[in-house]
Amino acid sequence: MHVILTHENADFDAIASLLGAHKLYPEALPVLPDRINANAAAFINLYKSALPFVTRKQWRRRKIDQVTLVDTQKAPSLRGVTDKTQTLIIDHHPLTIELRPEDSFYGEVTGATVTLIVERIAAREMLLSTLEATLLALGLYEDTGSFTYGRTTVRDFHAGAWLMRQGADLDTVRRFLDVPLTDEQHELFEMLLRNTEHRTVAGYTVSVATAHVDTYIAEISRVAHRIGATLEPAALFILVQTPKGTHLICRSSTDDIDVSEIAKTFHGGGHKRAAAATIGEGDLEALIATLWEVIERVALPAVRVSQLMSHGVQTVNAQSRVREVVQQLRRIGHEGYPVVESGQLVGLLTRRDADRASEHGLGDLLVRDIMQTGTSALTPDDSIYALEQAMLQSGWGQIPVMGSNQRLIGIVTRTDLIKHWAQTHPQHVEVTPRIDVSQIQQVLGENAAQLILAVGELAQTRGQEVYMVGGCVRDLLLRRRNLDIDFVVEGDAIRFAEAVAATYGGDTSSFRPFGTAKWSPDDSTHARLGLKHNDTPEHIDFASARNEFYEHPTALPTVYSGSIKLDLQRRDFTINALAVQISPGLAASWITTAACATWKPCICASCTA
View 1 (cartoon, helix red, strand yellow):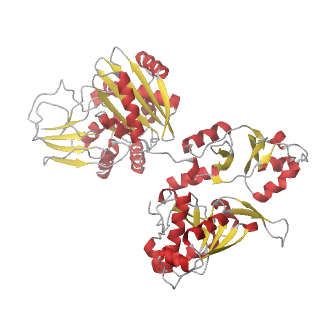
View 2 (cartoon, helix red, strand yellow):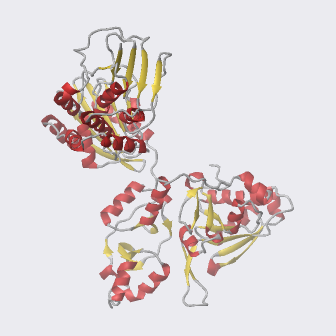
View 3 (cartoon, helix red, strand yellow):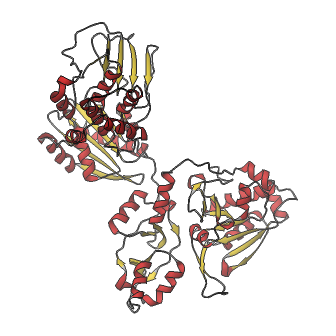
């Protein structure tokens, strides 16, 4: 006898997978579990005469030769199943058990187990009835959140399209998935909202909601879904204590908070973004404390504003006339400028608003009259999640960044957010050029490589961001020798060059109007760094990251400090627009070109952290 089984508290993916496996193995008997989610049970009750399922009560004990498990890896107890029963596991979760010689596993990470089964059905060119296609679609749509969950794959979409061609009815799918809460679930929903604690963990907003009930409440996960939609935290944990134990429901909107790892601590499991556990008797307050400790341990740090922001910021005085600032704004080229008054942030002036006022002859207005009023600001340690919320709440596309002394130190923009999105959501796989220490040694020689490493180490010690730029970077990628080495420093390049000379020896010369310096290694440098007396660059150039504009043709540029991004923007779009960050370490390092504005993983030689 061949039977098909799934887990208790079966959802639509489990029930639909029973049906799909029966289509693949028509001689097998699909046996329903004792506990089925209410919406899936309602579907079965309406259409059971057209479905091949049997219940546990209808099951007659027979010798079972083979079991197919769907949407689970642990066989539920059933009369006739022994430790020697041959078992096929079909599941979309990663394999977490040790297989016996009698076991075989077919599984890949997809949004739903239905997807794996539908692919096999489609490969055999089998036909489905409209009812069968609709039930399979219910499993697919429920487990992928109608294709909105982060774990959804392209294969899930293909499976859904194939089911549509087989006649799946989406009106029925919506009717059985969009089920209102019961009265008991509504009461639990209100109780959980009243007992919710919010904390910031690793830069994310995390919520823990708790409740104590005297009776069993079915499908707490549906209540958890409503709580999450209402509060919109980065991660949500629900603890419901009942007479028979405590239920833990975990949901996350980011892989940085892996709720499956958190659930494992309480002997549960699931996906990175959805997991659950059933905990035995215990003090609820103690469980809450333990849960927060586990969350703090598992959560990974979010991307911080400091990793996206531009250091240095151009501000506008609220009492300035529009005509006095509009030309300066056009020269600088930024889209938004913090407005300050008496040293305090009071708003944001966009170049568009300034241009519009000027074009309408309103140049005598004060900046205060046309600015966007507000004090929205972030700190370098705020998360990208906080950045998104700040932009949504303020409507600003540029958010000022405040230091510990409440002074403006930089700005983070919507463009920075878009670049981060492009980096974390690549459209296609690219082969990123890499440069390592051995390549620098081979191309530039031992002496030049040692000098570059030394500069990087000093910058790391001083906490400064330093970049190797220009033709040397290009020639390293082309494996051509070029000892014309240039660095850009975010900050005072002259002071940094002097620190290099003080640490490693050599002489410096500088030109303060442009913020540039030249370091010439000498015999003391050779002694301190163990350099050979040949193939050493005569000098290395340092420049402060800057932007510039020209008052009129043939004039020398007017220079002001800026970030590496602004520095690259002012350069041409070829050789000089290449930069390699050599400090800080690998975790925060990038290579970029102003031409494509695409940030790629670091190719720095000294990033060994």
